[in-house]
Length: 143
Image (cartoon, rainbow, N blue to C red; front, top):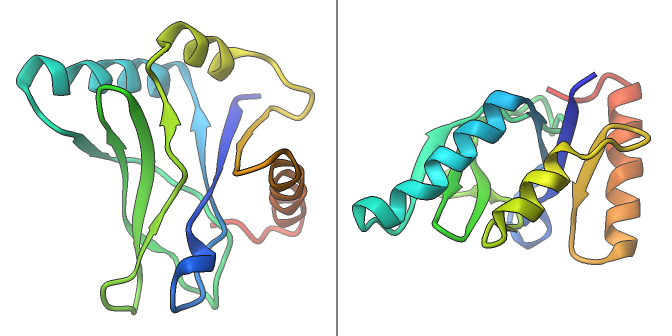
């Protein structure tokens, strides 16, 4: 079973109801693409590179994210998406450092008991987000 990366978002800071997390499958292709994109900003003197990504999230009043993207710089990556049926509201995840690529690669590939890698602000937030994701997954509330 592939591992899933679950990352907390800025939902609590938005003026509208928004997903509290985004999730993406960590496949060998995802890791390879992330590594490739991580190298582009330095090579081409860019500040960031963006690409489409298949993000999963909790249902919010039947709405989903549109234009889901992974944003990659030479030192970090994060996910964004616009909320359907809202103006100027964008969901953004925490960023994940890629400065030590070997550590990130090892973490993305490491086996976990529940095949989840959860990223949030504090250890308490991580535990809460892990349980929220597992509950939403069990109740088929992830789109």
